[in-house]
Length: 358
Figure 1 (cartoon, rainbow, N blue to C red):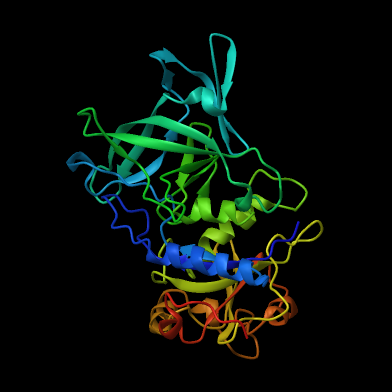
Figure 2 (cartoon, rainbow, N blue to C red):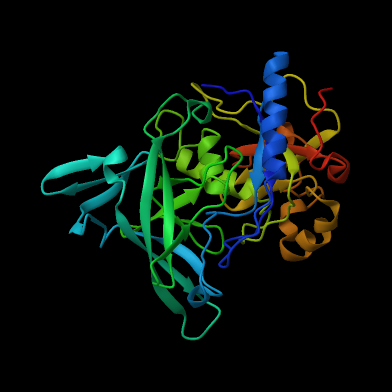
């Protein structure tokens, strides 16, 4: 199923460990622009709101200074003080058993879970368990389900800060005014790598790119479109402008991008659109390890750093295969590109500005 829409990526901070300063102006701008375009009957393809924060979870408390989220445990979860058995993620939903009864959806409101957090910046590495509780569960909005596959719920989580029974929201407010997260059956490390795990899973806040890419239609568990787990992973690289695939983002709050895929039928899920927006040009082709080929950076000031850190992403010579100015370049080089994007040539001029169609 192909979706037509518009994407702006808000840059926050990658895998932040302390409470994030959440700016919602870009989100509100995106919502207003989308509503305006829908009212005008104009469909803009592939444009969404980007972000540089992966999971979006706010870790609060003095005991967690310098730590990052590693994932939520399948083990040790309880509901009403009684253990939950065989906790798992099915699609975009947490499921478990208790007393031989399967619990899912709103039945898990009130459940307590533990997340593993840690820091690699000290020797030996520091780790800790953080308690969370689920205070509300609701069905995902259909507007965030371009493939019409359902099976996704939004979870409101609260963190037990420093084990003091002071419960604080785990997620920032998104542009729908909610503090919610989507469960995914994998984890992401500090380098932006997707890691399959039998013991941990992710609750991605809807302000982070893990959940955003999921909402753009790239649901890792979905079949029939090819390897959507890989496409979703590549999307998290794209959304954060993680060109080198090292977990370092290169974008800023409110930066608009146009994203599309090359999936075969019933895809594409995000289409390029018949008319590109005025002022936008091709940026890169993306895979799970970052920019598979690169024309330019989203912000010009980042190009020198990219050329130092991963010069192979933008080589232009008779033998080079990593430079691409368009989709055809990537295809001609035989590169394994999963996603493409355009961005404004002058993002500062268009930063947080209403979209103007060509």
